[in-house]
Image 1 (tube, rainbow, N blue to C red):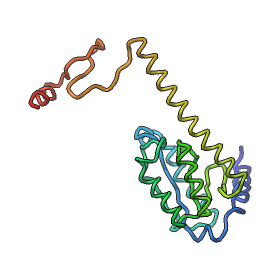
Image 2: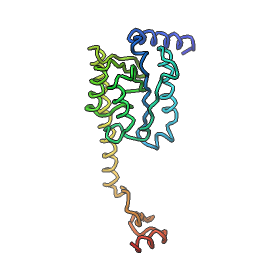
Image 3: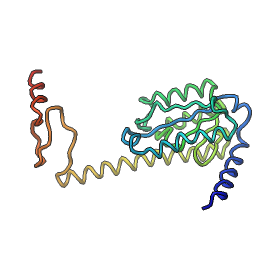
Length: 213
């Protein structure tokens, strides 16, 4: 695929997005939400982070100044399965409800939520506040019936994907357990031996510290 074709494709995509964006949206902030599910992903999947931060250019192309784009990345390394432990997501919701945000940007729906309850609450608040949602594929208006349907499907698929990930993890653990190879996190002071048996930690200082308790 040559560069000129890609430029035409990007220009066409931006043109299709731009008609939903109004001056009222641009008067408010655009908010870029960044999240990866674990610290391992944060450290190892640097390309994902680069793509997420790069989404800022979409907001600029749609008319926001760089200084009018807020980045929320407080939830790096946290699961999207629920919002109780995600201060960044709660901050985003509060700002939308306060009418401060005209556009929410996230690389994909799963970055925002992997829980249908949280997702539909976000959509409801965004609809009331007239806040648009942008992912890598397009811009969506929660007050538009077709967009709302598509956003609902994206949220449902995101939650379904999480359930699939969990099922695969549990299946892998069960398979290892059946072979006698499953190793779980042990309490401090215990460690696995080379034979697979559990014994005291070979570090005597750890064992001695526990014996003092």
